[in-house]
Image 1: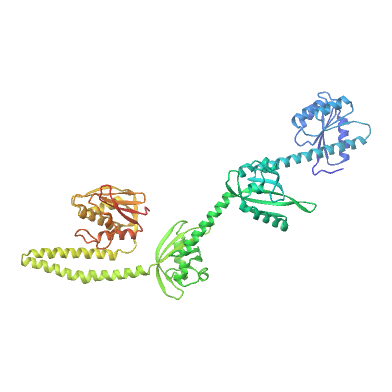
Image 2: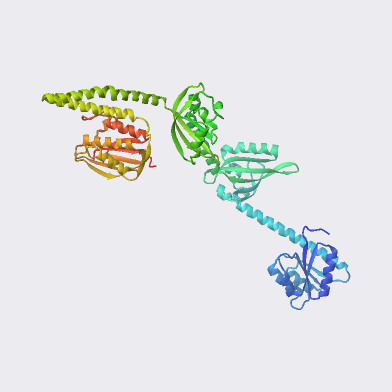
Length: 587
């Protein structure tokens, strides 16, 4: 007898308990794979029936329901469950009724023990067929469900350049615009009608080469849908051989258009980023949390005198001589992903010489790894300019201020001794010279970046600056809100110089408005304005259209640059001037 991977549970139904017990005993002797349960009568059988029963063996003549009636009841709940009618009362009429009711097998009881071997064989055959059919049905359903849920097409085609489809299932219409029947009937052929013309020959050649080498293939190519759209497909398949000859191909095709487009965008983006990285006028390097340089750009190599291979693996403090491992770690430990820091430092070249740099550090974690992007700029020229300005400021504050003070004192003494209108003009000239010196010192001393930024309420800063400037009958309209990150004294300088400029050029009754922009603020007045052909000159040092020093707006531009703000001069709504400051950090 064939042995099943699992016991065969048999429900034996009879109205005679002794006969049922004896039949069960003989069945178990035939093969120990039988697990026989007995039920006395049809009603008891229906109570014992469950999903685990593999076969029902029933007598025909029983008091509550006969075997046919029991069969009909079983078929309502279990349409395919093996049911063998095993009866001592046989007739053509009973056999006909049993077949009509869907009996699996029909067997008459006989004398002797040999009948149990026949019964056991009938049970095994019925259960084997039932289990095989059930397994096939489940596999078929699973396969159908799998195919229906696959994001693509399952196919079988002949191995010919036209790729004529013999069977195709899945998202055919969604992917190609054609229905499966058109492909299977040959009205539409994959090769000439669906494959992109530019990819047909290469696709055929690559598939054949892979099949010859490995018996399977995997590739991407383009198709043209029914409405003319170009889409990318990814296909994996294998050869089907008959008598050793490759005749057909089976495989799976899925739409990867989104992936291909994404990869194309990533490649383009990567190329642009690499170009920006390598061609940047600034020095750039990427290092990890241990300070190990992983990616230096060409500018860093050029300025430090190291080859790229030399810089990779070096520590940042090998080139930044103003820090060590401890001080660097202290900075990085305080930084969260996305945080940035700006500081002044000094780099050491490969030859041992040094140069000053402005360093911007930004934490840009990737794949759970702490990474830091360092953008540095050589500020040697700026530092030299600052040193010259300091020397210039020293000369102005001492060598010019002292003799001017002497001259002013002499004029005061002369005024006490005689009354002359010329002395007033000399005193005015001295005052103008003092104003020029103050402006020159301001330019010289405030030329660098904002050194002490803090959170400042804009309205409060405007009001304080307004109170510090002689404004006569001028009016202030304040509609600015929020706060900015700025150096307090230099922000005051900016507003004071703008207010003086409006009063000097707009008249004593000028109205000045300070208001909000999306990324900053503006200062406008209703004065006579500035002609368009002169607006590019107003920020130049010494430029003036009145008796002012010509330094006020130059200082305004300098303060804006120190904060990395942009300043633009336009016409106000009242035809006056309007200074717009954008790129303002609100903190």
